[in-house]
Image 1 (cartoon, rainbow, N blue to C red):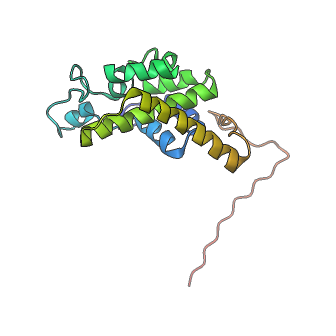
Image 2 (cartoon, rainbow, N blue to C red):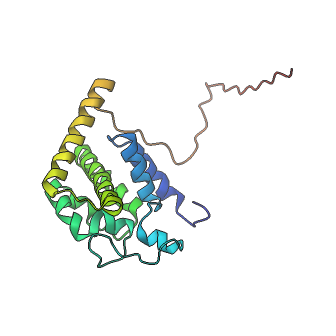
Image 3 (spheres, helix red, strand yellow):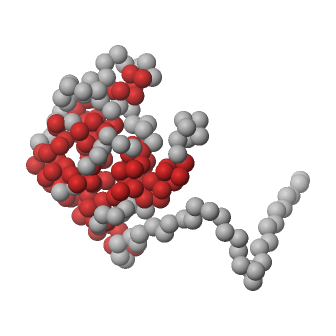
Length: 191
């Protein structure tokens, strides 16, 4: 991240939000890859000289960036509208970390639905690119509702209640109080 010249505070805030989402680990991992701009889109592959054509496989009108594939392509805009999550992507041209940070003020259920929808869109994109298959919107919406419901049932079964919101880690180290004694120890056994 430092080598890329990134704002580490921005990544840290996005990291806390992403890993605190009420979503499965694979969805959170996908979202971290999205925020880190490492999804293997055609634009990224062209930038790395692995492809010559970076046009979107669905619409063919624009270069396929992460934002275009997940939010801006004409194939997916209706899905965001139907899911009720289109307000979460009002400015998808900006930083993905900024967008995720704006999600903090949203309802946890809406944020969860948006995360599952983005992951579902990416899987649909891969299905089209590698198999040539597409799924109708109504089937994708039913799949989205089922994913959200299944994760809710899973969380309730495992945790007894829905996962609590992640606690924010401090951005600055604070020493322990005077009444606390900290002892660091190390040991080594040589044969």
